[in-house]
Length: 193
Image 1 (tube, helix red, strand yellow):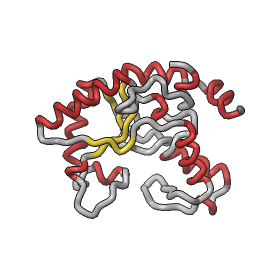
Image 2 (cartoon, one colour; image 1 turned 135 degrees about the vertical axis):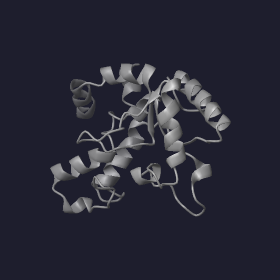
Image 3 (cartoon, one colour; image 1 turned 120 degrees about the vertical axis):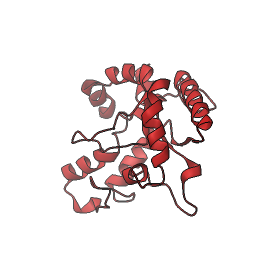
Image 4 (cartoon, one colour; image 1 turned 180 degrees about the horizontal axis):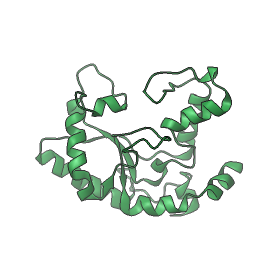
């Protein structure tokens, strides 16, 4: 992957229709077909996100124009935080522009429209995917089968940084290569320009 593709500044590596890396798109379609056979429907909440979109999300949270959540998914007032605290709070749920796994076309946020209750907006919060949440059947299916299609959950457990994201899948054969290219030096140089 070129540096521009890695940073979300060039989308020439993506399949036009799905906006995913071609290998990831093929694996995703196969996973969706298998899930349908088990009466589980998988829909994309988010796929590829370019640098500028990630920057808009980041700046919106930093400036208090977009919701910012704490570690327990409770809203917090971004503008009441010191700059360092604000940055840390944003990083809990949103990557730095240029550092998002969504830039690679290998990472997707999924849900099942069929499981979403009427008049309910998807929040992409952990409780929706946990026992008792409307997306729990999807979550269980993915936990059992996603790996068979090359996908894994990069934010399966909380290591004190990024929050748990049971909706976020990553296509390992490509994303692991991309992650090895995403170094602190790469990000420093990218964000300095």
